[in-house]
Length: 68
Image (cartoon, rainbow, N blue to C red; front, side, top):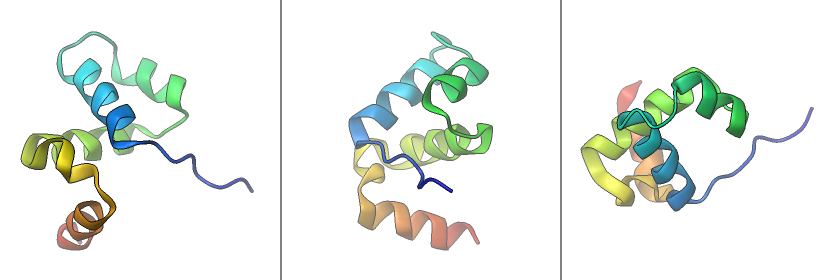
């Protein structure tokens, strides 16, 4: 199995902006980035709550831990 692709905070931000502003559909973004629908939803939640800073490793781990 291959490892998951890593995305920069800026790439995540652009995907979320495209999703939230309706520039691209969730399906289109997920297909282009090879990510699940849940992933883009999680990124949108993080972005809405913390902005670009939410995509740093430190903050992302906190968010995922907090969600459980």
